[in-house]
Image (cartoon, rainbow, N blue to C red):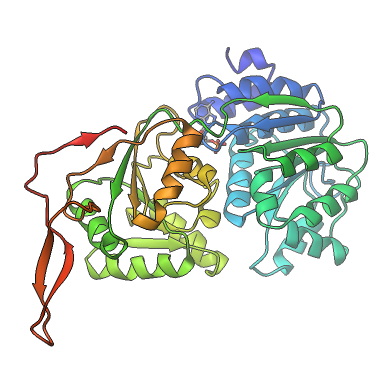
Amino acid sequence: MSFKDLQLNKPILRAIADAGYDDPTLVQERTIPLVLGKKDVITSAQTGTGKTAAFALPILQLLFDKQDAPKKGKKIKALIISPTRELAIQINENFKVYGKNTNLRSTVIYGGTSIEPQKDILNKGIDILIATPGRLLDLHKQDNLNLDYVETFVLDEADLMLDMGFIDDVKKIERLCPDSKQTLLFSATMPYKVEQLANTILKSPERVEVSPTSSAAINVSQVLYYVPKRNKIELCLHLLRNTIKGNILIFRRTKFGVDKLEQTLIKNGYKVETIHGDKTQNLRQDALKKFKNGYVNILIATDVAARGIDINELDAVVNFDMPNVPETYVHRIGRTGRAGQTGMSYSLCSADEKTYVKTIQQLINVQIPIEENHPYPLDPKAKPIVHKSKKTGSKHKKGRKSVASKKKKKRWY
Ligand code: AMP
C-alpha cells in the first residue's frame, strides 16, 4: 500500500516524500483510514512503529479540508495530550514536518517553563495543540484556553500517562472538550486500567493492534551479562571500550544513578549527556540536541524521561539497571533497531535482578543470549581472587577471577 492509496492530499503527500518515507508503516496503514472516517480508535503500538504519523497525518488532512481563518481567530480543533514534555515537543515537530505545505498552525505547551509566552502563542490562534496535562489545565484555569471547538482528541502513550498519575487530569481534559469529538487513544501496552479509561471516554471504538508489547523488536540483537552489582560500572566501561560502538542510550532506574554514572563516564574521558525528571526543561532539551547532533554519543536517561523520544540512528541501548516492569524492557530496546535498521541491546544483570530477567523473558517469549566472556562474571563456581587488604594486610575474598582468557562462549537458555 502507498500513502496515495490512503487518500491523503497533495500538500501532505509532498511533505511525506520530503521526510523520506516511501510507504506507510502497518500502524499507519490500519489507523489512517479509520481516523479519516471520523471513528474513535484505540491503537496499541509501540514507539518506533510510526504511530505519531498514524494520527498526525489524518488530523492534518481532516483540518486541511476545512481550513478557516488564516491566523488570529483560529480555534483549537485538534488536541493531543502527551505524558512527557520531550514527547510533546517531538509530536509538535512531526506536525510541523507533515503540515509544512498547509497553513495549519500547531504549538506545544508543557510545564517547567514560563507560561507567558505560551499564553501569547495561544492568543494568536492555533489549529493543533499538543500539551502535557498539568500545564494545559493551568492555562485553562487562567482562562487562556478554549477547548469548545476540539474535533479530535488524542491521548498518546495512555499507559504511561496512567503510570504517571495523570488519570484525573486526563478525564478532566476530556470533559472540557465537546461530546461530539472524535477520540483516539494510543498505548504501547493495554493493561486493565487503560481498557477501563478507554471504556469511559471512547465511543464504539475501532481497534488496531499492530505489535503486541510482548514482541521485542525483531531487528534488535539482545545480549545479557550477569555481573555483580559492584562491578557494573567496570563492566560498562569495559564494554564501552571494547564492544559497544556508535550512539548509545544507557538506561538507569533512578535519577541518582544517572548522575553517578555520568560522573564516572566523564572522568573516564567520555562525552555524555543526561536526561531525567529533576533537570529543567531547557537542560533536557539541550542534552537531547547535543546527542542528536552528534556532539556527544552517550545519553544516560531514566525511563520516564526517555519514553517516546525519537532518536534516529541509535546503535545501542544499554540496560545498566534491569527494569522491574517487563514492558519497560520492550520499550527500552525498541529505541534502537528502528525503521528497518538493526540495533543492539546490552543488559547488565546483577543477582538481585535475576527475577526481572525471568519475567522479561516470559513476556517476550525469547531467551536472551547470555555473554559469559567478560571480566566480571556472576558465577558462583568461579574461583574467587584473593586480595590483600591495604590496611590490615589480611587476606579476603574479592570479586571473581577474570575470564578474559576464556574461550568466547555464548549460551542460549
Ligand atoms: P514513532 O513511532 O511515531 O515514534 O516513529 C518512529 C520513527 O519512524 C520516526 O523517526 C518517524 O519519522 C519514522 N517514520 C514514521 N513513519 C514512517 C514511514 N512511513 N516510513 C519511514 N519512516 C517513518
